[in-house]
Every structure is written in structure tokens, then in C-alpha cells.
Amino acid sequence: MAPYLMRVARRGTTINNSALSHSTRFIPGAFPRGPPTTCTDVSGLAPAPPLTATTPLSSAARCFSSITSAGKRIGVIPVAVVMGQLSNQPQSQQQQVCNMASSSSSTLSSGRRLNINNINPHVKAAKYAVRGELAVKSEEYRAYLQGGLTDLPFSEVISANIGNPQQLDQKPITFFRQVLSLLENPVLLEKEDVLINHLGYKEDAIERAKKLLKVVGSVGAYSASNGVPAIRQSIADFLERRDGFSASQSDIYLSAGASSGVNTLLHVICKDSNTGILVPIPQYPLYTASLAVLDAQCVEYHLDESKNWGTDLDIIKQSYEAAKAKGIDVRAIVIINPGNPTGASLSEEDIRSVIEFARQEHLVILADEVYQTNVFIGEFVSFKKVLRQLQKEQPNAGFDQVELASLHSVSKGMVGECGHRGGYFELVNFDPEVQQEIYKFVSIMLCAPVIGQCLVDLMVNPPRSGQPSYPLYKKEYGAIYDGLKERATALHKAFEQMEGVECGSPQGSMYLFPTINLPPKAAEAARSEGMTPDEFYCMRLLEATGVCVVPGSGFGQKDGSLHFRTTFLAPGTEWVGSIVKFHKEFMDKYR
Image (cartoon, rainbow, N blue to C red; front, side, top):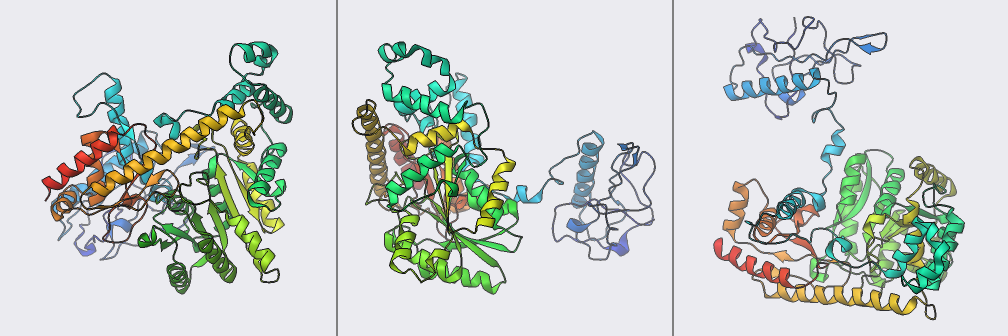
């Protein structure tokens, strides 16, 4: 009888087939009805390959036999391991093979169909450092402190790892919340005098709620798959005011935050595993994680840190040509403007060069513009505005064939309503048949949250001068903006004082992405704990101060360089001082 082997994860290890004994030991209980006489692969469609003298353990066949009768499983999935004489193999490895097989057999026979070895490998391959190990540990510390324990060296956890404004005490805009409260509980509209005279509601907030209720019916009901038509028209009007060029509601799709829009677009663009998407490095890991799940190719192009993280067209071209030379079908380029994690804002000249490159190479542009109101230097310029200008300036140059998808969200800016999951994307110059497929894709998820859609309407059409809610809205909006800018400046100044830390001036978004130069002993200590040096630094920072940041390796960085990303959303400056103190002690320790 042929031997059967459990697949294990130790790659490159081989089994000397000639040394296997003819008597095969099976794990007790693995085959309650006797050992199988045939072995099939995981799919159950083809015989397992024969064992050769150099079969890697990672490729050894795992036996599956699902016995069915009248549509019901009456057997178990058998797993066995050859435990004969394995010459030249360490005893510890033999035991590891046995232990892994026993564990798998136990899991499967206990009734659980799924384990870590048989779920979608593309999901396992995806990485999302923003909510990775450091974030998990920070939440453990938070729960520890909330439980009344006080033996940590800090009294609170600062979640500077994620752009989550209201978790870090950013107050919601009053007008927005007043309208939302009336949408959620329309019965309040029956008591307008109480709302106005006792609860501080303004007449325009009440009127806006009535208007939105008229077009949505109820925020508890589904909307059209691409969003409420009247809200899409509000977005189109906003885009026309912003850019000076017309927009059509038929090209606008409401989404559950911009992340949902990115997911939709990548699913449609990525044809197969040979599809490549140009992604900036460092980048928001949504893109690399999504491409990993889709089994598509991330084609990295590095931003130029010496130019405050600007785009370098020559580098983009090099990455594109290198991918093409490998046979990769590069279809799109991602631009994050203002940048995440870098905070950099692109100049109009940079935007023009990217659009020209996309025209030449027939690339779709994915413009992630969720931080468009978080600009501290200069003014935000949208990709759509520049594209329309190029079309106007050069009407026969082919710019009307450049496909652009731009995204925006209520999660960032001065709105900061991450939890309401509101966003949209606009399609420019897309083929109508492709748009029909995009509509079909969003229809599968029915619609974006309707309350989030209403919040998008409020974001793109806020109170205006002369309306009752405008003075308070302007005051709150300005205070949030000024506070962000002040904290960004204070954090940047602190980094300038820290040994071995370099950081460009804050330009936009909610983040700084400083370079850290650590002593060799710190790198050695990191390796001894199985970490990269930036992960090690960030973990020690969390353990000493309660400040959670994200290692630069989670966003991608040039070989040999180290960074971390931090928000400047947290109120106050005490936590900034704790970073400075920690850094000095860390450098002294590993000097």
C-alpha cells in the first residue's frame, strides 16, 4: 500500500523515499473504517502525485476522503502520516510532522471543517499593519486600564496608529449630527418648537432633515444600488463647484466609505492573477491587501522622500517597464493625494505628468482623494479638474480616453465620521458597458448604508453663509482645522529635536511619516525577537508610553530605511513629550 503524508508547511525539507519502511504507522483513530486505498488531492479531482526521493514536505499529499450517502457525510476526513524510518531526518522533525497531522485530524474529526491550513490562502497572504499586532496589543492595554489596574507605566492608550478622529476626541459637527438625529428619529419633527427653543436646533437643520427624508423615505430602507439619486445629484453639484467642470449623477456611486469603492474598482479592473496595479510606496495597505486577496500583482513605485514624498515620473516608468518585461498586464495606477502615510500633497505639475503617462500607456487612474480638505500648504487640486483642463487645452490628444476614478469619504477631513461609513467614487471617461458591470457589482451588496449616504450629502452641501447654522458650522470647522495644523506643527518640531529622526514639513492628511535611524544594537535586539527594527522600536514605544504608531514596514519602504507613521489627531501635547522622552532613553540604551 502506498504511504500517505500530511502536508506540512516546512518548505524545502525532503523525505528520502528509499528509507521508508514497508510497514506504515497511521495516527490512531485517523481511519475508523480502515485506511483508504486511494488518495486524492485537496480538490478531490485528481490523484495525488507519487512520492519521490525529493518530495518536499510542503508538497506531500494530504488525504481527503469524504464518504457520502443520501447527501449526508457519514465518514470522516482521514489524515495519516508515514512514521517509518526517515533517514537523515531529525527526530524533532519527525515529531513535528506527527504533531501537525494529529492536530489536523483532531480538528477535522471534531466537526470543524475549517482550519488555518485549508482556508483561502489569498486572505492569509493579505497584510494590514494599521490594525496589526501593535493595535491588538494596544487594545489589550486599554482594557487592562479600564479594568482599574494601574501597574502600567502610562495611564492611557493613545491610538495614533489610525486616522479615527472621533476616537481621539474630535467633536462631530453640530449641524451634521442634528440632521442625522432627525433622520434616525423622524417623530422629533413633530415637536419643532421644542427642537428650536429648548434643544438648540436651527431651522435649516430641520428643513434639511425633511428634504432628505422626502428623497430617502426612511434611512432604514435600501436605496438604489448606486445610491439615492438626489444625493448623487448633490455630489455632482459639489464637484462642479469644486472643479469648474460639469458632473453627472449617473457617473457617481455611493459607497460604504472610500475603502468599499476601492474594493469595487479593483474587483472590476483585475481580470486575473497577471493583472498589475501600480501602487505608491509607502502606501495605505488597503491596496496591497486587496490585491493579495484578488491574487493580482502589486507593482510598486517608490515616492521620492528627498522631495517631501513627491512622485517621480522616471521611477514610475521604471516600475512599469520592469513589470511589462515580466509579462505583467499593468492596467491602473493608484495615486493617494494628499498622501497616506506620507501627508504629501501633489502639485498640479505632478498631476499633469501622471495623467500624461496614463494617456500614453492606457492606464486607469485611481485617485484616492479622501484627504482633500486636510491640506496645510497650498490648495488641493483634483485629478478630475486637471484632466478636464488637459482635454480642453488639447481636444484631439486622446485625454478623453483616460479613465479616471476618484474617491472621497466622510471619514477624514473636518467631518471625521468614520463609523458612519459614507463615501463615493466618480467615474470619468469609462466605457458604458464597463459601468454597467460596476453597477452590477455594487448591486451584489445591495447599497451603501443610507445614513452614511445622507452624511455624504451634508458633507458636500454644508450650511452656507446667511443660513442659521452657518456661524456655528464655520466656527467648529475652523477650530478642528486649526487644531490639526497646530498639532501637526508641534509634532514635527518634536521630531526635529530627536536624535536620528528626520521628517518633512506637514503638508496635508492626518499623518507624519518620519525616518528613524537606529543604533546597530537595536537592530540586533530586534532580530533576536523576530522583529524588524521599526517594529521593535514601535513595540517598545507602546510598552513604555501607551502611544500606538505603525511601523513603516507596514506601508512599504526602501530597503535599509526605517520609518513609522503617526497621526496628529490626539488632543494635547503630553503624549508628544512622552515620545521624545522614550526616544532618548531608547537611543541611550542601544547606543
